[in-house]
Length: 442
Image (cartoon, rainbow, N blue to C red; front, top):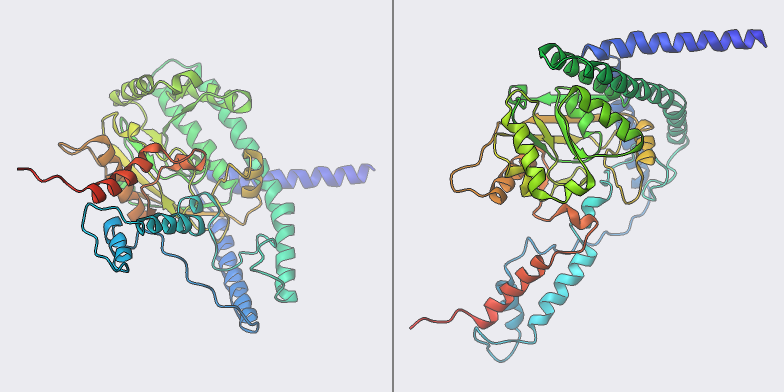
């Protein structure tokens, strides 16, 4: 029994020595020993081999033809043009300003297209992969192919759950514990330059340890455009770990609702050392109060840049949806940031309707790795005569273009809410103006 205890103690010592010496200390100082890069290169080779093996297996099987998708409505003509096509099939000509029964078929068709090929709800489900990434056997598109591929998958399960997961959960616990302890201790210092420097150092170290806990490989582009103090950083939103990804390269003032429990402990410790902006639930409904506090934060040019995700919800790494205009009414300089994850190594999207936070983090810590590209775009300000909505759309388009994402005008709140009445009224007004026509002035 004593021998077993000695062996277990030795293994724990070796485990923590390797973790602290090869992972934590280099991470705290922003260094890398190249282990993760080699690991990612090996993964790429294995996934490429698996893809070729799957394609070879599919070629030997008969496949059914895949029907072409229905048009989504955005690629066609306008409402008037499409209704005109329907009216051409009537024997009696119809002049502008008349109602035609065939007009109803336009709305029937649009409704069916939305049910079959709904572009909005597709953004709230996981991104479809071209080939299997050896992470799950539940996808019916990837059945048994060969014994070697199955053995590789089995070895991957053992490595991810028995080696990577314990290592990652240990690093996450250490990173969060150091965040709470470090920010609490820094919070007792007087408000001077030393306190701000130590606060930023503690935040950077903790986020870098947490990033290593996800085996994150992050490529930052155009660092000369990094958000500056007194500015507002806006980014597309895929996952709660977006914060870890961005804070791994610089410190930000977080904005969000105050929570209780473990999250509340972390929030209260963080705000002691850094001017984060936490709102109570009652304050979140007061748009004027929120805007006033954010504007006051931006007015102090010595404060860290505010980090905001204007979509208000997580989107599945394929698109950028409507930006809420409130972030663009504050004033100041906007620093757009585009985030794009590589889905081959793990699905970073948080489907909050399907997974709670614990289940999501479990999926993240048992994935192969988190590989992501971050682009810092040039700073942008409101142009003369430009309202907040147009400014938000301009920033959103720039982020979507840089990240190779689809630029969508739909509101991300449709993930939980029904379609707003204003969208219905917009279609009604378009049809009404077409049927009634514009009155001629005498």
